[in-house]
Every structure is written in structure tokens, then in C-alpha cells.
Length: 102
Length: 166
Image (cartoon, rainbow over all chains, first blue to last red; front, side):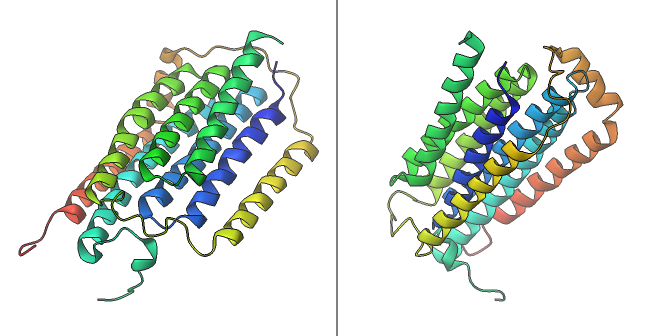
């Protein structure tokens, strides 16, 4: 059996890669993709914990399902906002969205 | 090495390769394809973790719906024609923060004494059990999640709809 620590290290590495692309990228679509990767890393962690803690309870799987639902909602809304930003500024650069008020 | 271990390390390598491609690729569409690779590899990790329903959902929602949505948004925002420095000037700081996060997570994973680790007997959960748990024990969160999806859908339609004169 694979030790729990290996799952934690893999998901930690995925989370860090997602964090890097959120912080370092300039295109809003790429930032959103980084957020998706971070959410996935957290779900892997939850499922691994629930399997190693109490396999009959599968709480982690339920949590991961809800994480996927919220991620789907977030992607839909985020991409709509990016489309609107592109229409107003003709760019999807996150630095272009600096107006707090119209 | 058992076949389970080989599968785990292979899918973990694929997931990390996809994540690295997303973080460092110079081409926007390549980054999206690397993201698909990472998400499908995460579905493989779910299979190793005996969560086959979750693996199926992952392939359907992430591998299908979300990546198609992202590719559509790239096409509509002409992400390929406007390269204009995909990376921020804060790149070194981002690298430092991500590296520190990773090191902190590794240290915590190896120094915390996780309770009940030995008991990990192989327990397969079938779809029926997950379904009844979702609709009986988690019925209210389930309904709220569907409401969240409805609100997000209406919001996305209203935000993305072109206004008069555009």
C-alpha cells in the first residue's frame, strides 16, 4: 500500500504549481486554470484522508463532489466576467481590470 | 513494486507534468492541454484511492465540460493573438511563494503523526451507497449546491450577454 505521505506530497506539489500559475500569469484565463488545479489538489487530499482514516465513511468523496460543483459554478461565472472584461478593454490581462468604479 | 504502486507513481508523474506545463508553457493553448492532462491524471489518482465514482465525475466534468469552456473562452478572448507577456513582473516572488508553500506542506505531511494510518483496509464503495448517502445524509447541501449552480448559470448569462449598442 502507498503511504499517505506520498499522496500529500503529490497534492502539495500540484497545489504549489497551481498557486504559481495564479500568481505569475497575466492572462485571466490562465489564472482561472491555476485555481482549478489548486481545487483538484485539495480534493485529492480530502479523498486520501478519508480513505486512510475511515474507508467506510467516504466523507472525503462527498466533499470532493461538492468541491467539483462549486468549481463548475466558479468557472462559468469567471469566464463570463473575463468575456465582459475583454469586451470592455479588448484584453484579458488581469492588470487591465484596475477600475474600482466606473 | 506492486501494480498499484506503479499506477500511482505513473499517474502522479503525469499530474505533476501537466501542472508544470500549465505553469511554464509559453503557449496558451498548450497550457490548456497540459491542464487537461493534469486533470485526467487526478482522475487516475482517484482510481488509486478507490473512488471510482469520483474518477468518473472528474473525467466528465473536468475533462469534458470545464476544459471545453476554458478553450472557448480562449478563442473568444483571442488569447493566442495577444501574447503580450503572459507572465507578470512579480514572477520571482510567485516562484518563491509557491516553493515555500510546497516545502511547508511537505514538512507538515512528514512531521504530523497521522492517526489511524494502519487501518487502511481496502474498502470499495459502490455507486449505490454514495447515491443514497448524497440524497439522505447530505440532502440539504445537495439542494443548496443545485441552487448555487442555478444562480451561477443565471449570473453568467446576464454578465456575458451583450448590451444594447455593443
